[in-house]
Length: 303
Image 1 (cartoon, rainbow, N blue to C red):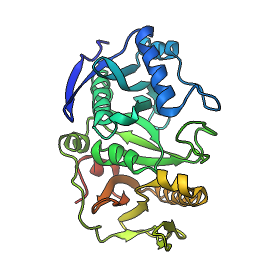
Image 2 (cartoon, helix red, strand yellow):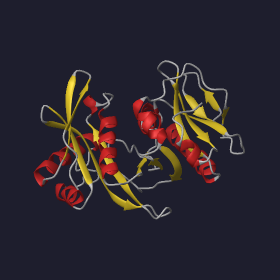
Image 3 (cartoon, rainbow, N blue to C red):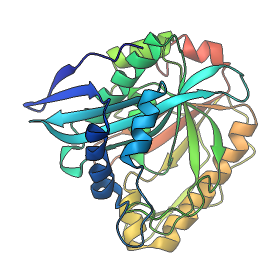
């Protein structure tokens, strides 16, 4: 397969170069990025993906891409070919993507995913899948709201015990993002992501909340008996801060949100949007719908 050509983008007055990596020497830069971003390879942390393994991924039909500023690697993504066990069709499995902290919130992650999509389309694939932690609003904002991926299933403690800068002693609960890259929904999302909302839509919210004297929100028993066409699931906009300040509260949030995803996704709901409401600190919600998959993929946003 012909590698994707180098692409130059302008983000916040910086020129970022995206390119496909092909040599072990190039892959060695990504080992250092894993150390800085996740702490992999440091004492009491998991091991990084070795340069030779990443080289093997690229050589065997996968996709390894880097984002560079002034020839210095600031982000990367790694994906390989897979077979969807339910659909029994090939797809691109996106395993890892990261951006250095000082370069986050510039849209580099978004452009790395679009670059990955172009690779998959060239390979005649129409689906990319990956896992992410549903408790972090930044993950959901990129994956669901901007890219237009869907959540169709939830996996508790999927990776077992992982030691990284972000694990914080919590279970590795994950949802699967299904990105139908050739759909009308995705094409329109990439061209024009939905705007932020001033008010929460008048929909049933399955996450009743309480608030303490310090303004910290906690999740009461979730509502698991709803059957409306659309439901809202609120998560904290600042889950990382909760993990630092009150780990027991973070674990409680994670466990209850996990129950919600497990219940409603098994009942046929899809997670089709991520809503960000108001000014920071915002209220943030997943939107679940019972609409059929083909109908969801034919439109761009919640109407």
